[in-house]
Image 1 (cartoon, rainbow, N blue to C red):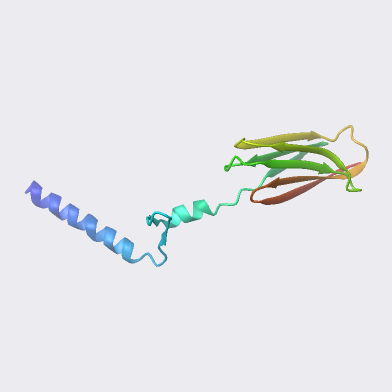
Image 2: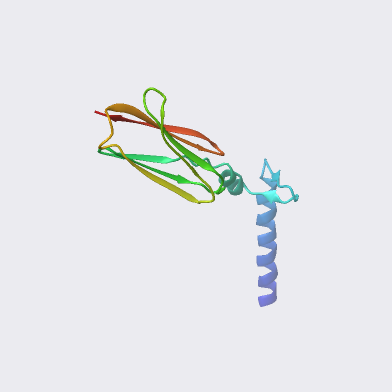
Amino acid sequence: MKTVERYIVAVMFLFATTIGLANASNITLDKKGNAKSEVELKLVNVKVEPVFVKKGGKLMMNLLNLSQEKVTVKVYDSQKRLVYNETIDGKVVVEKAFNFEKAFEDKYTVVVVDKLGTYTETMVVK
């Protein structure tokens, strides 16, 4: 009797798997010919942008750099003069804190460039 139950469970599992695969309208294959699930496709296309947090005269920036490639952080004043420049390579998490509390009154632009794009945030010092 237990053998019959095992066969029934195995047949039901195969039937459910077949229905699931048959309903997959867009099956994408990777370089090796393996099918990628919809969840994997959505994870691959995730865009990670830096997070900027302003607290008083301080600006904090965090970026998840999964590719661990070069990230460039620059700060410009309102006359497009370069105030700060740093290139960070090989880090998964890029964190920077900028203290504008003693800076001259101006409008500063923080520019973050990574392999996925360019991101900006402005900080006004009064």
